[in-house]
Image (cartoon, rainbow over all chains, first blue to last red; front, side):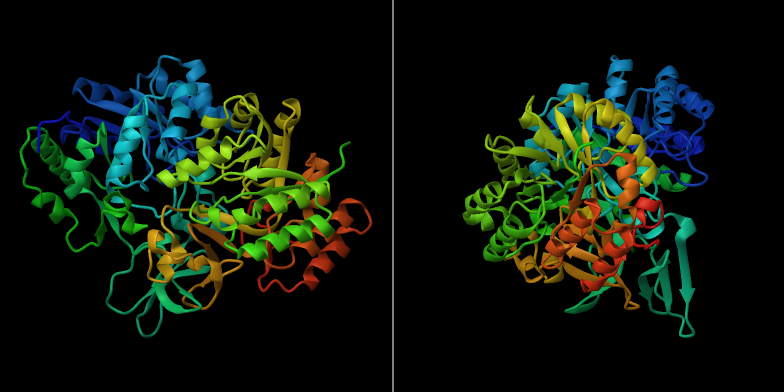
Length: 334
Length: 300
């Protein structure tokens, strides 16, 4: 491909050790969140204390990388002080941008910290040029993380019609529902994805094996899938389960247990004007982060030099797993 | 105190145009409803289907003294969506209910409502919307009592009216993919409007046979019907004066009469609840979200 503007590689970190791994592996920026409900990956054992975040900012900056702080769940009424303090804390320790989903918090941050960079979280669900431009006009957002529901062609059109940078997911778990607009977990568990930052929380997950070794995966009261003896069972996420409808049995009503891999579409995304390519997975291990980051680093650098890099490493990473190019490749996915 | 208003939210399903028209004619003629939300919220492909009947319906509703509000699309991605959104939001004849932030881009300073598909979970969000021209906000049905109470304090100060859904299936998620089309081995672009065979959505059961969810095109809904009949006096004490019924192919108008009688003090909650129990909607009621527990649960 022709030489193009090289996009940033944005990598996840659930712990300070993962962050160091991602920085050392060649990430241009790392995204991570504080412990607690202020971020959309509020899992036990994950995320950063203020002190850890402050040290991580220094570690990243010393090595020429940026730190993006995700404060991207939706504060419930009466509790916004916690989110505002998180925003103030993040700014005070020098993070490079705060990733925000809630319109009230975007309003707060743009007024209180007018010189700081706001990135609009994927959780804000801004999927059209009009929506993005509204956020740009009102809060001067500098970058939007696009929902995983647009084709590359649509991303190009959005790029040409908006006043901020685009960040797009390229690799990792893919939820089937529009981000920031899903109450399925709350319907089943009483814990809200938007308000509590959880999706299929582990303390509601059960695996039950019958005498024939069939394994039923369950979230709360509801069976999400049943896997015959010997096959591997996926984590019970509602939108990756199998269900019956009147006219058909045991089908993946939303999507199969599958992950997103846009390796083959990287050149097209770069040409569409995407400024930053994002890897999902703040819950992932250090070794996973190490191999994914270094593989994408090589691929992006290769494409940016106008070469066609060897991407067999990246494909090997997901070998044996089902993967998809999701909505990005064509409208047929919809 | 203002008299409590009973409203009918936008029809979320793909009904035949005649069914759609006749439903609203009946609302106009016999339902004790104050405000009616019209317009396609779920799928831009469906919108032209009932437009032939639109003017007649608006005319009949307005002559019957109902306020008509135009509800916009909840998800905007394709160019068709964007054009429809622009057309909806720029419609000079109607008060607009916003279901995606894209509509705010077009509305500029025009007064409007915020619908339940736009996230408004806290006082800061509410204040932003109010200052941006919102006069009414319909809360997301996953909001618990404590949240409704806290938000209503701010809403009062800002002269914004909050609305709460009290009846009908709950919209739980939106997607870019059409799950109705997928269930019939089609995709959104080649769907041939297969969603029209399910007037209240397509039920999904678990592999163990437990009723679970309902598919409505790109929307995933609860299998249960939300019913806050036993929470009505508490909601009124909190200060909520706008109540929304989400329409279904049957039972909606009867439910509106029961809720109106309850609001007018002609019957009590126990009687109202018994009258709603008499209706066979084919699915159980739920009120879990309000009580801060799993949404499908029913707490008496």
